[in-house]
Length: 445
Image (cartoon, rainbow, N blue to C red; front, side, top):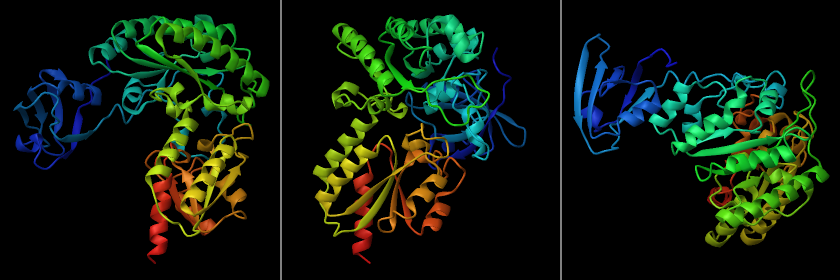
């Protein structure tokens, strides 16, 4: 069922833009474009792609006007607006047995407790969705407006098992929906959160090959290990992967990758870096990850980071004259970050100390850098600081804000430690650039 219409309101009109030329102003309501109601950002983008537009607007005075615009196809008319649907996304209707949000303690920032499951956010922001709260009309809308790619958390293609894992009777329709989307040339990235003794083994093999049947519109599948915090009281009993079970997953997936590669020349399915780290095995080479389509899911992140650092080691040339830095990192990436830091120290004559941070907040089984909190960083690094500059990965923070998971601002941690904190992209693309910038500032004092 199509949601009840809420008009979108213009918040900004770019100077010298098409919209300004035709008299569109802030606080105008967009009622329709070419006779079609505008539900959200997706429809706005689709409808304004035409070269001829008839935009029906409502002025703050209540006057209704129709504006005829001629422009180049896909040319932006230059407005921004608050999207009532993107600002109020659909809530998740599942109760997944592995849900990380259900394992959060109290006292974290409010937005962390909200579970979204919205196809628009999948397209616009890369969020993963389960398709369980979607109607046939929603699927048709994705197809009509070419909302592609979308990211889908599949977990299993076994209908009964998926119903159990997601605790949602609608979860078993995932293959039906995926088939309909891919038949309409909608591109889909898929994710499997792997849980020992539940959706691994033969179930994992079934899921991968079911998804491969929809190649190339499903072109990649990410397999990530379930994350288990210490806050699971009353929740479904789950086990974590260990060294031996991680090795088993790697061997199984390698066989599938080899089989699929003979057909399409690509692995199709890839494992999160965590599996190789837990198994104490060498990561696949850089080329294995091709376009790094699921980097934010931890697929190939270390190889991507390594390549960025190696390229920058060749590109940059400066003498740091012994300037000191500290890097705080998760336990799983410590050895790799330490090796990279040594290369940077040797090339640029700086002194970087890398400190592994044990995740006491969520529990020691959580080892990734992106889930570190300010409290753990403070307690474990205060006596190990090297100089007065602390380099932290951007994925520790809320998007576009300097706030940690435990709702502490970066400046508060900076003041408590008495150091300057520099955020670096979690992909490593700007680490050396940030170091050079601090060296220049230090030398020009």
